[in-house]
Length: 475
Image 1 (tube, one colour):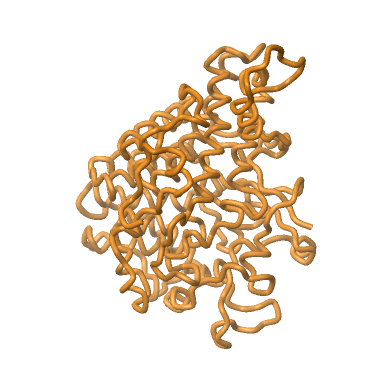
Image 2 (image 1 turned 135 degrees about the vertical axis):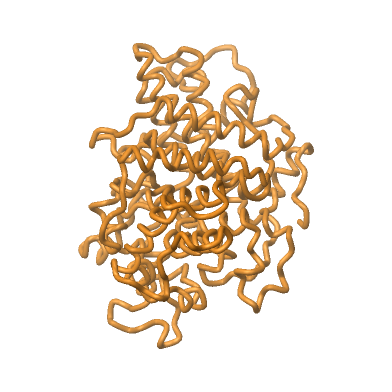
């Protein structure tokens, strides 16, 4: 038995992409059968709009698909075993397809709302729905632009998006759309949701992701350092708002009881409604062990409580993987109840943005803005380090200090992100925005590196279908 990971607690079994494809590929009919649903006549109620959000997230988090089973796409971050700096043609094409399918679902809902089709919905309700839609669209484009660079921008105003032959927009234009969408979300999403609507994005989740957007814009490939200020300010707002905080115990960060807060800000949500790929399958070395932690990376990880909490070094039977030459696993996603674990099911969430990430975004940006660490930047990173060390001094992962240079503090933050956010689909993006891939790669594969490795290839099928698309260098 397996489970599904979805955006909302209940999912309508709606295949919007299939509806779109059918309606756009059929010949024009003289009559429209009564009750036939199309994107142009379906979105008339808030629940119907929300079904588009569920369908969009299902594209990203479902059985054997996308981020539900996609860690291997990022194995060149050298946290997962198997990184070799060989990126073949069509690498990441599954994520390209999943994100664009999600975007098309979201755009259909946005178009309906902009067209005034929600009968009986108040303006605040419509604003909140639109805030969720634009939050989701911004997230999808943020993932795409970091993986592939300049990409086609498809919005709710794009005519016939399934057949449009679009050129790649500039990276800056993609970020402009992302910024606009996240700012709208910040203005229209609530600070918290009722317990019955847990898991939906909040205004602070939008602030946290937009802070990460600005942090990325300050680094590669735009290299516009003025955006460090924006990143620091948004992260500071999340910290000061007080809606989220670190969980005291490192062993409770990924527990079922804390999967919707206070540290988890937005995640791929898990429940037991429909089948999907369980972490027990892909991260547990006592299970299938499809994805393992890189032994070199694990050996270099500081000895601290966080290591045992996040990395599966010892089997359920007490065998030490490193001592026996076996591969370690990913402990983060194995905190199910014993009954669920033994049954091979899981409702563990996988984070997209959490409070520890925001603290580290703030520390990095504040340091760069001020030409060196400030007390607030030091305090932010040291909250993460203190918890990792069990609140005792640890020379293998010492606290940051005001006496550090800007460069030393920045390196400390990036390394702390490496340890704290491991296996959260985050390390690869830190590597490419900081341009440190040759430095972090294992020495045995560095000869395979070229600067072209910082982008994935545009999927060949899309290039064949759209002559306006160009390929990234080196593919």
